[in-house]
Length: 166
Image (cartoon, rainbow, N blue to C red; front, side, top):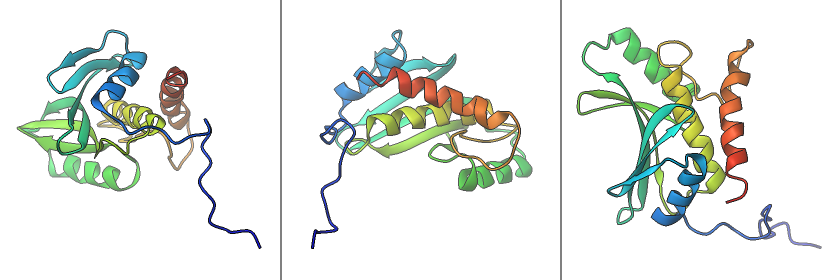
């Protein structure tokens, strides 16, 4: 009888190497050739939305961040809606408040992060930034009808296509 525990099969035939600052940079430059290294991170633009991606290799962490607005003046209703979205529609991205600013963020351990996972998460972070105040969605998986899910998923598909050759 054959074993049911087989080694995973990867599309390219081999597992991806660990994510490093350098590999992350190559992926980000493939997505935005005008990206700029800044300290332990990068500034770039995804579909016209400025983003900061920072790493902490010693802690094996990374985060992608899009500033949305000052946190001052957020209503209880807005905060409640963002928390609901964090649970069901923001997906891998999240709304967060830090240093008086509202952010769209993606936070993850650095080394296990896979290329397509990163690219999808960047698209989701841009989508929750774009849909703040309206749909509050990462756009990859969403219940309901209408045009928004397809439009938002289009950005993630475009980014994944750019990353195919990396």
